[in-house]
Length: 174
Image 1 (spheres, helix red, strand yellow):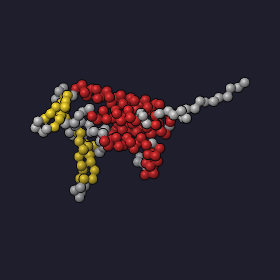
Image 2: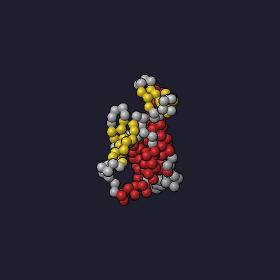
Image 3: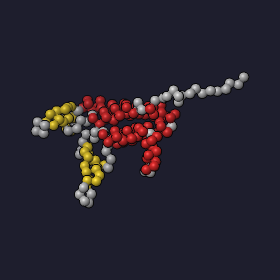
Image 4: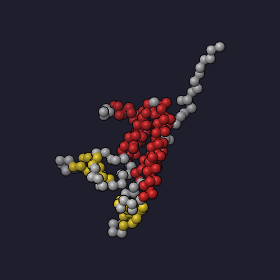
């Protein structure tokens, strides 16, 4: 279900990491092979965009990398709403970060480049095993996701403060 305007404002106030992650998602490079296309309104003006995968023809209303940032935001929200889960949520973010870095290593192993295309004066990347090329660096998206996760872990939502960790006092029967 969609949040009301008041609920959105309250969420952003209690979890500033969500706004930051939304900005990261908007700046994140598209997955190699995907492109953003404007959708036309009846008046002929661009009103919305769609995302198209050139390899499969898949069309999506949201960018393919958004799912990574939704997972990170969920962990941040959970850590803010339930501070006792912050350590576990940090672990999940760490897992997502390591998975992204692992994907970067795998992609780097099979893609070469950048190579210069003299006819277009542009750099491109090539995957010899698949016989495909891309104008986009195939590692760029997941590098951005991994670095965003790494930076998120530095947020105060995941830093234990000494004033929050108080020793439990128990009375000992005599």
